[in-house]
Length: 520
View 1 (tube, helix red, strand yellow):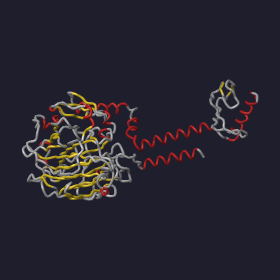
View 2 (view 1 turned 180 degrees about the vertical axis):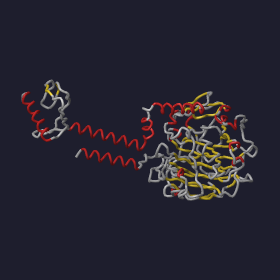
View 3 (view 1 turned 90 degrees about the vertical axis):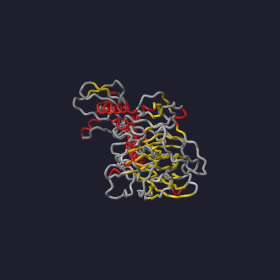
View 4 (view 1 turned 45 degrees about the vertical axis):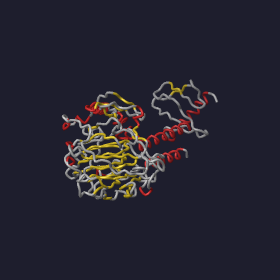
């Protein structure tokens, strides 16, 4: 077809469009496929029109106010489909994992809030990270600073400015019950593979700027949320504060008819899966005095936890905690604030623990012992054979005297939710027993006569026994013990495949529907 004939065909098509009032998309009634205009110029003068049958360089005049149609092609439909696929995959990813990252990216354009947040983080880092005598790089990515014992964060506390370090307890209750016939495995921390801190220093996990990436609040980073331990009152009661929603517990407790001066327990080690970056899962002991009602609850706590929000990963880590005002303003995890005084250079508080138990396989546990020194009233902490340090009695009100209750067990948390897929313990129910369910064995307490004995345990119903449950037993090998744990859906053992929450299935279904629609 000659150039004039081709231009005539184009003009005829334009005429049909004008007569029918159709704007934008043209289809040649005699053509078998769609054709697309690649470039036009709309305000008069020459316009290069590259179409099927119209070669580059052939020019036509376009009227000033003429609206030129754009013809669609199979390639454009394919491009649209690919774009929508990418869009849905991105949104699905954000729903599962990326919300904090997307939020950070969304504020990148607003430089002032970003700069302010960064200044706040850097100021806090300067306060937390003390000048080390030497530094150890751990294989798990942690940086361990060996800080002189007299320069540790504890002495930033106003009550401890003139405190004299006590390098050993004046009183030790002696050998506690531990006649288990199971040969204990040596428990190590990952950083120990790379070195050892010198004498008269303590190993402190360096807090990095990246640790705050998942933090919901800079001010409360490293702090538990208020009302974050169970009470004997039902958490399903309509009067329960909203802040408790999202917390799930499976714990055993002593009676409140006596005074207590310490506890010992051997806690099974696992690496449970957590659903979201702000979730956590932990197993621990609580030493408690005071109450929530007057915001004067005192606690000292120790155990292991998995918390991506605090540590930036999902490793199993040894932790401690304390508060004197029901978690409102005082206390923190580990050494993220002043308070606990460490004297040992072998164990990093907040460091990764390895190895952990395998479902149906090797089992590992860690023995934790906390007791009150009769002479000075400090609460001492021992892990395995290592005496780590103490919480000075001056930090507390009620615990300056004694504890009124002790608890052992597990907790999981998902912000703002009554339902979570995060695992507690091994992620399996207590009825499965040894090598499958998580345990805490050799539960013992120190009473008002400084006797070491098995406790009178009160078992209260977990908030959701179909998700997380607990059983209590006693035998000559383990003494008083509990099995506990579970998850709110059928999940693989800790160490198995990733969980697939409901958001995954929603976006996957939406994506499939989109693809089908654009291919029909």
